[in-house]
Length: 391
Image (cartoon, rainbow, N blue to C red; front, side, top):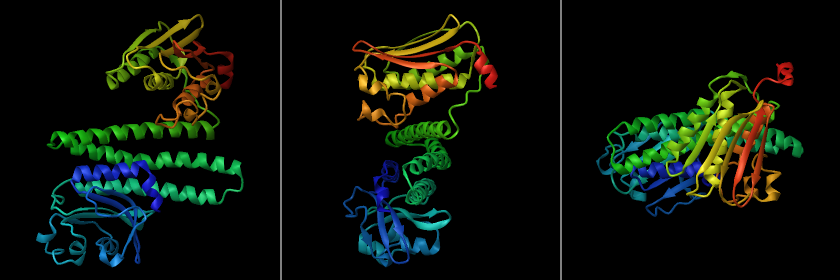
């Protein structure tokens, strides 16, 4: 289980714990009757532990957390009647400490713990509630890893592996929603309390991470639905307000990226037979792609208009052209590394946009040269005979 230390989300959780509590050491530990093993570590005080290191179980307070099945919180060891004479603080030299159980499928797995050689105000703060929420999120990670490992061990061939992997992508997305919502709620509660500027910045970072993770989960679930359900399903109707929905997407992205200029012209004076929510998602993905890859300081151009009996929507940005070799794979999932190896993300946005276009009997094309990269959606304005027969 030491491999959990490689999970970026867990490392981020430990960093946030140290920042919000003021404690200098935090860890996720596998705790049994016989051993204490560090799975992931954040060490800002040179405590000397690294992932994979072990401690004698009887020298840890985590052993008592395991035995009692409940958290231990200590503000100041020297003033705590239950722990001032305890051998563990004396042996490891800490004064403040907090540890809460991590339960995997209802069974005790280990602990999420933190400590510091200085006293800290923990009992009368949100520290314990935050620890419990993070412990639930870590348990979700562990459970997903466990199920994925068990499944992969049982695979007979590459096709079986691919199918089962996609199924577990869907399970992973669902399993992360509840703890993620809990973290968001906890962050909002903390944000309502009086905070100094540094703490407010950290709360903002938590909200930003939550939003990014939520977006990744949505994309992964769209991938799972598209692959396992035979493609995207668009709930189409005669939408009189599609133009307003597209303008709202643009307004939200302008607000989220005030440093980027987005020039838009939306001219839709008639109903479009479409799933407005999905087309808004398509436009959002295309603009987000332009923000990520477009040249800063140059406007992103967006147009949506009726062209005869078709709707045309395009997004254009300046920047490095997409290599010809990458364009044939551009609308496949997880292919971002082919032409943008250093960019973060799963590379699902363009694939999702392409699937939405197909669900509307439309096409999504790309043209890219040294002057401009342009993605263009073209689809029927009205229901076609093929759409009618399908419904």
